[in-house]
Length: 142
Image (tube, rainbow, N blue to C red; front, side, top):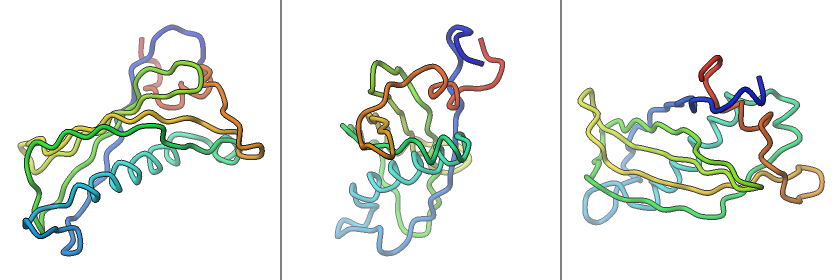
């Protein structure tokens, strides 16, 4: 369903159990771990949203990450990551990720990343056309 106007981004969630090796000398999840989680949830979202033939044709590289840390997470907790895509212009694709704790969904960190799709065979940037973008949208959304 391409070219049908703006569509609502599909949210994708994944749980991240906090392991002992994720903890730094301050006793909370290290900032590098959040960056790893941003990468892992983006890859998982891509694999869940895109058909196998598109996954074979397109690979992604990160151009930029911004992370705002709000509250600490500690060993033994389960952090839930939620991601969705934002604006796409040319060969740049914005992605947002939020990390929360518990049933109350207390926000631990927000991230904004800019990704670039590449042609898997040539390694050259690929445009984010509606056919690619729509894989990250809710079906039938306005």
